[in-house]
Amino acid sequence: MQKNSNINLKNMKKINKAMTLKCLWKYEELSRTELAEKTGLSPATITSLCEELLNENMIIEERAGVSSGGRKPIMLKINPCGGYICAVNILTQSITYTLINMDLKKIKEFVVKNSEEIIIQNLFENLVKDIDALLAESNVTIEKLIGIGISIPKEYDNIDRRVLFNTGVSADRVNLDIALSFNYKKPVFIENDINARAIAEYHLGAARYTSGFMYIDVSEQVRAAIVYDGQVAKGPIFQNNDIGHMIIDRNGPRCTCGRKGCLEALASMTAVIKKIMNKSSDNKTVISSAEKTGTIKKIDSDFVIKCANEGDSFIREVINEAVEALCIGILNLSSIFSIHNIVIGGKVKRIKYFADLLRLASNKFGLSEDMGIVVKMATSADESINMGNGAIVLNSFFEDMERW
Ligand SMILES: [Zn+2]
Image (cartoon, rainbow, N blue to C red; front, side):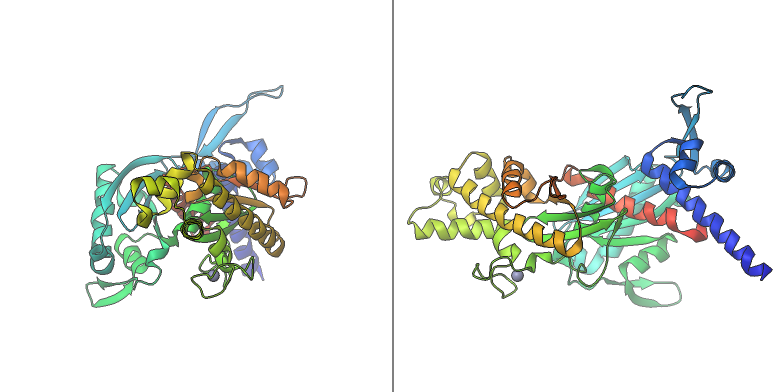
């Protein structure tokens, strides 16, 4: 009995230490009194935990805070130089390597070209070469590396992520994360791009520290992630972020999945492009800008966004229909998952008036703060996806009880 109760006390301390660090991470800086209030731990426990964390260089003491009458309190914060994360965003054309400190601040970044050959044959070798270069250029040793966070786009969902890895004893095909983890002796997390963007939005964007929200990415496809308390919800429904195939209008256009009237077939940029093409030929007219430049066959998202931002009224009308379909989708998703905070990101963010159309359609379909549903546009920059990758690593680092 005595032994068990010791184990429990030890575990309790680890949990409290992780909770204290996560609290400081979330609120950026707090006094010991505030930490006790936020965590619910006693002031004596907080004092003792902070002493240990200061000795471990995990936290630092900051400037004096605002006094509420007595002595000015010393503020505590996570030591930004306590460790570093290597974040890697893989896209079809390029790979971005970013070194991030514990404040989620970018220390160093470079971009290298990507190719199908790298993805299929040499991904592991290239990642190791460039991660080594990132660490060397930043003067960060492996000991200071907390972990590696990688995002991979949907285009690579079906590639074989096993790589040939030589352990010195044998050469086997192992999963990329295992091979990298073995190589660096650090944890490695591989996420899809939507989850990484959602986490970036939680730490740096419109959903900053919202307890639960849904991030919906509207680009060529419509995909989503749910984030609860800073962690992406996992499960069969969200495994492939495929909410885009929820049916909105059973008489709607055919979707790539074979069904009719899916959210993706009505609200994605692909749907907008298709509608522009169809409506153009139906009416024996073509959209003015495409006609002028003779590029009707090259209509893609970038072209549509450009025309939209130049004020093409026909495109605005088509986009408005897509926004209305999106709002019906949001209404359904909000009811199914009991999520009341929605953040819209993706390529549509680049359409200047998208937020205005979204606001109007939200009012029309009863998506308002009065109705308990808040719909916002994403605010974190596209490049901040690597901050999401970094935050996924840090979150796990703070929660890893074995560390403490
Ligand atoms: Zn579909």
